[in-house]
Image (cartoon, rainbow, N blue to C red; front, side, top):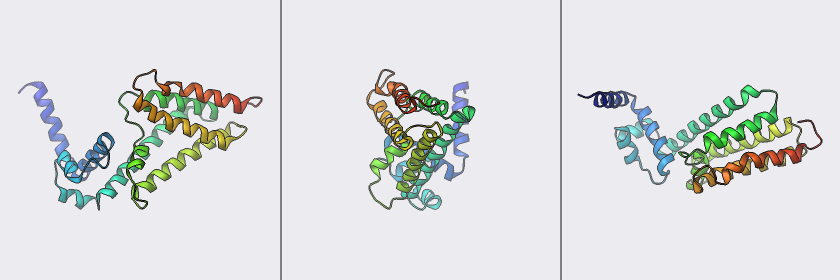
Length: 207
């Protein structure tokens, strides 16, 4: 057997040895993000995970609950990323915000990104009581609160309004990145737009 075949076999074996719940969750999270929640059924998830529908329902109460759990994990990953960007700049809220925006364009909007998984999901989850909607609302409310908090900390003239404006820019950048692929689309102007807003709000104040 060739080295490549041996490695491929080892990877397949390692994957199959993971608990069924982990395989189902990882498959669902990947498929929902790449193909869309409505486009992916429980049969497709089970097949991708190398298990059965019965196993899926033994581990997750329903597809809706599985969707919500995947969104919670996206949420955890996003805030871990956020904290890793701002922690080295503790005590300097303006630098933290600018670092977030720069990192957002570089990391969150690269050529492989398919946008914000939570924003994508809200378009598909029409039912008011879907458990995923609460996860998305909590996430976006937290983002709004954190942006406003940074704006207050830097002494912006109208911190809440500035925070909301920044959120609109960031959310719009996700969508533009999907439409205008490459480094010269509207998303590339996000850092300059944010700096312009900050200059207007912080003029005559200490940054």
